[in-house]
Length: 151
Image 1 (cartoon, rainbow, N blue to C red):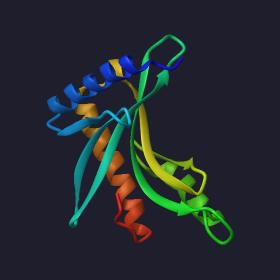
Image 2: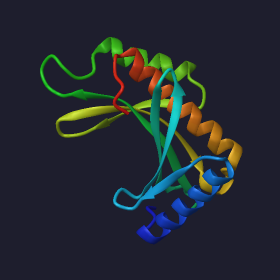
Image 3: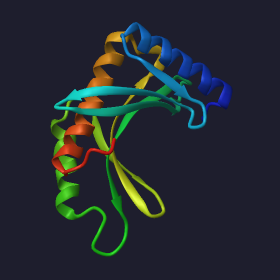
């Protein structure tokens, strides 16, 4: 079951309140229906973490995803995601705490993202801070390893 726009906005307001309790600053992006936070990840680098509503569990609990872009790859011959990069992401999924890597597939490019899903009803300030920091650091470390600094 997918929540309607009004419910999504109410959840994002909850996210905003939890973030404030965690000492995190951010804002709701109405055009994308998500909450945005920026983090200083050290070494002169920063990274943006978003929170969006992704659905409901079978027992109607709302699930949110904290996510951060890590790399964009162009599709086409001699580009995209190679075997070694795919294996690297699988290995990172096994060793990275509080984040997993995945691919978002678009018409002309794919994006590698670090993310974590959780229930909004059980998300507290300490978890929000921890999850957001781990997701931002995971995405930034992957991006830095591959020579980027776009996110």
